[in-house]
View 1 (cartoon, helix red, strand yellow):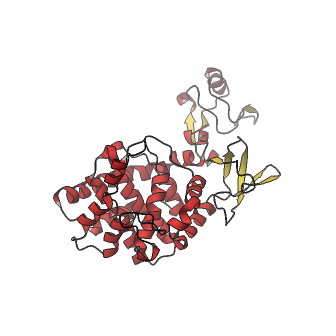
View 2 (cartoon, rainbow, N blue to C red; view 1 turned 45 degrees about the horizontal axis):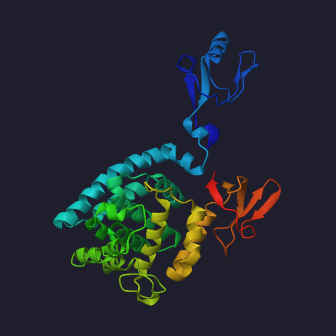
Length: 356
């Protein structure tokens, strides 16, 4: 983004600590101050002596280091964030009325929320970048998880080239699948430490709670099954019914991946969100047996491909650029550092710690 994010400021409005975004020349075309000069009283005095009325100043975004910091400081994100909070209050109100009073939620209202937010992001990659930077308030965590999952469902559905009606249905599954959690206490859902066996048993009831709430509402059966089955795993290790791959509803398989992705990429009060390669690494550990590989692999491949060209900092403090993706080890790309190529597959102790 860099130097396009500058603003012109009148000399009278300059403050100490501001930084020049461009070289400043006199009317005789002599350099008075180079770019990156920090403003102080002497600088302002000299500008006055040369009758310089306006200078270009760096905006906060120019000092952002990582890719995600730059996203967070962009005008597009600020517009998205404002819209997101407005949509959140509407979403929360409708869901509360449904959970507490049984008032039906209009699918059209939810799809309007989706469309409003999706139109604030230029494409799927930008949507994921925006969501990565959202910091929901403590009491909105469960609602944010559902709203974010619906937005991610739209992105992944497009990446998988699903027909529009299937994508819309997947988005609706995203809004509803975790609704059972709204019947459970916050401190259980968002406990930072390890859950006791008893707590985990109670947490797992959210799939049945959601199923019971949705089953008689006249909703599409895939929405109801996504609520019931999104913690089932293809190898039979999931809950509540230890189903195997062929027994799990296809939309529940999509949602299982979306749910795990959202949990890893959203910041919690007790931990940072993971960067894209950490997310891919987590999925690659045992994801291809737990999730449907025909769905998971293209999604992970797409996430990895969107990182091409970015610079990264490694766990040994070296900096490098992502130049190639290893299709069989998506979390371990090939990097260039100076004239040297680093294949992370060959250097297992090196990790990508941040992306620029």
